[in-house]
Structure formats: C-alpha cells, structure tokens
Image 1: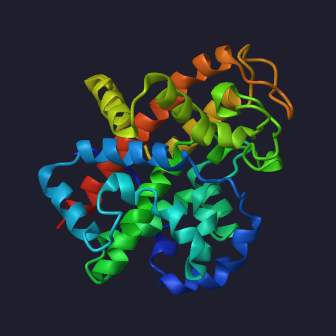
Image 2 (image 1 turned 180 degrees about the horizontal axis):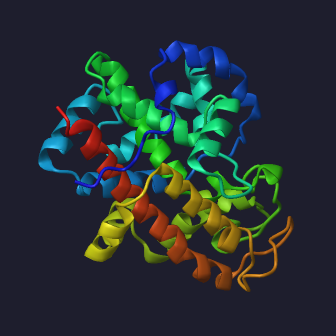
Length: 301
C-alpha cells in the first residue's frame, strides 16, 4: 500500500493537545481572514473524492467516527467543519496556523519543520499532529472524530496553491480589488487568495448547472490509473512544494505566464481557462491523497 509520509511534526504531535493552546492563542489575529482554502464546495469535493476511494472497511470506520456530529457525518461535510465551526471556538484558536504555510522558496523537510516550529505550527505539522490523534487508541472517540475533521480539511488546504504562497502578500490576500468574470458581479471585487479558494469552483458549477457532488464524481472518474499511482508517491513536503511551484508559475501570473497579477487587475476568460485544469487537478490530488492517508491511519487496527 502507498503510505504518504506524515512524519513531519511527529515530535510535536506527541504533546498533549492543550500544550498547543498556550503556543497558539495569538495566531488567530495573524491569520488572513479569508484563508479558507477551497471554501466549502471545494472542501466537499475533496472529501467526496476521498470517500469514493476508501476501502469498505476504512469507509465504515470513518462513518462510525463521524456519526455523532449532526451535519458533519460524511467526509464531504466533515471537511468543512474547520472553517464553519472550529474557527468560532476559542479553545481551537491554536488551529489557525495549521491552515497554511507561507513559502518564499524551496525548503528541505528539515527547514520546513523548523519554520513550522518557529511559528507554532503550520499545515504540515497540523496534518501530522491530527493524524497521530486519529491513529491513537488512547484518544476518545470525540477526540479522534475532531482530529478526522481537521485532518480532512488540512489535506485540502495543503493543495490550494496560495496556501503555500508568499508571506509578503499573505498568500495573495493583499493582492486585492480584482475582477473575475461571474465571480465578481456588478461592482464587487475580490482578492487573489479568494479567487483560488472559490472562484474556479463557483464559476464552473454555475456554468455547468451542476452541484458539488456531480463535480466530484466527474473529477474522480477523469483520473487515470497512471495518475493515481503517480500522485500516491511522495510526502506532505512534496504536496506543499507542488503548491508553491504552481503559485509561482500560474497562481500569481496573468494568462501570458509572465506578467504579475497586481491589485486592481481583471482576470478574464483566458486566465480562467488556463488555470481551471490546475485547480481541478489539485482537488483531485487532495481527494486521492486524503484517501491514502486515511487508509494508512485507520487501516492499522
């Protein structure tokens, strides 16, 4: 079985959960307010693709863990919990830093680990930490269910390119006053981070007249066996490096691949068509890799 490397942050993961609270209460004020990767429909798509690729045994374990939380009883719905609920819970304020990591250059696993420790955690250490809780037979069912909801969300976050974006523009949040097709009707404006979070999915759903379940099914069915095997290799470091490189090559540039996107710009049909396949592939990769992680973590016992 393919086993994604989740070793980053394992020493941190061994610490009691409330120790993290002391390190991280101030982080909510430092986190971009729009750093909700993929927004709800994107996260639902990731969760749905993952659940479609689980073994029957692992799917049953997931459903059992999630059964006690109304409205969040599937991977698709549970994947939105970190944005819809956790951000409103003071005791979970420390989770804020686990949604992203700002990367200005390629980092080795050791360098990324050190960066995450210096800032009291990041999406890489967050995934490892909650995978450890989910794996633990000493944790309560409620603790493991919470860990599952957060892990599912953070795997999705790691694949949104601007969640590994530039620190100086807060992952594209400060590139604002943008116009983008149907995503900014009338006099509305948005920022580059929000465009990647929700623009592609929202426009595609509207144009196709479909819901997120249908979109997830289509995306999953389009993945070739070769791509499934290829995407199953590597570690969380590789996922984040992929996101960083996509941001550098596509996410921050206009359709010509040269001109930087600046505040006040318009992102037209050419930019949307150039980057929609990129966004779709990241959703596919996130869903398949989440399934692999859950098979590893929950398939052990």
